[in-house]
Length: 415
Image 1 (tube, one colour):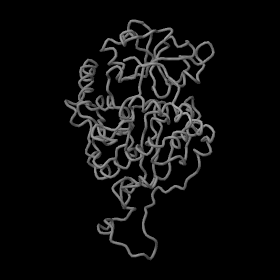
Image 2 (spheres, one colour):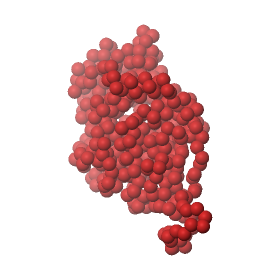
Image 3 (cartoon, rainbow, N blue to C red):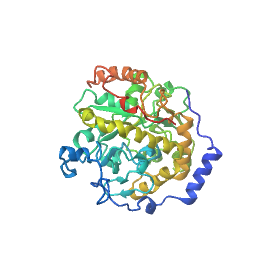
Image 4 (cartoon, helix red, strand yellow):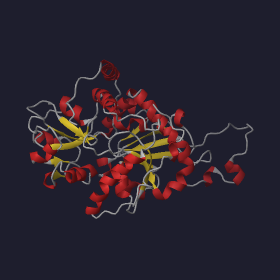
């Protein structure tokens, strides 16, 4: 179950990274202005004869439509997606909806632009992707959906879909972004030699993590760490790890932080150094990371849009994973414009994409689509979380019936 530390990337992936590093995606390319099309609808030019539209038949003009919905389709003209972190390669299939030439707004931490022609269905004309995490003061994404009607989709881990299910703002997962979860716990193997998960608890060392992380509660319940080891003060930056020389355990993404600490961050004797890690899947916490979720009380409203939009969004993921470099490396410039501690690089992207494949995080669903959720897997996660949340006094739904829907994955592509 133990993961070995990184080996060199394959020649193919390294060549991709070298080309990306040579060509680059600087702030200017990521910030290239695009013509705003929000509020416009596609149609015929003046003088052409057209068939009567649904809006004409009902006497409804575009100006009379509500919630930004275009007369040309059931979806909002401007599709707003709230992510759970800064732009990164693990979000690439969503940024693929716009492509590498969107507009970056550093004041609002958004990336927006016209939707690419290949995915323009249901009347969607533009897409706005919002950064999450400390970009929104760590406000839970389900809470953002509950308070901002402009947001249609939120990136919400399936574990958090379960957690929100009995509260005031339940959500429904309608498509996956990744098949597996890159969340992990990492450590310095010299200071904390770990051969099994139980060794984390035996070490007595602190585990630095975000507050409210479900898999940390699971690790405590499973005996992989103790409650006394829990340190929920993590903010996402490497400063504490660097200051203390990596003497503790820390959460992160296997496809991101491991490369940074081994190749970029000078944390041990003034240099990067090897780390080891367990993904949450290695710990038998079989989560779906960052599902595309919508508010449960708006599912019926969104239904006609989801039928056409979800397959198109999943096609964007398939296309991204087939050729990730243009979008993944454009996100280097987006983060540069945001100008926070969060940075990515061409080499990191190349290695991260390779790890998505190595760890099986970008595989098809069991039904052959790159979209649906495995019902037994969701049930297994629910069975793990139900007693944990019960002990914490958190009420959740009595079953998994309303936590996810595969209805909109019909017609979705596979890789």
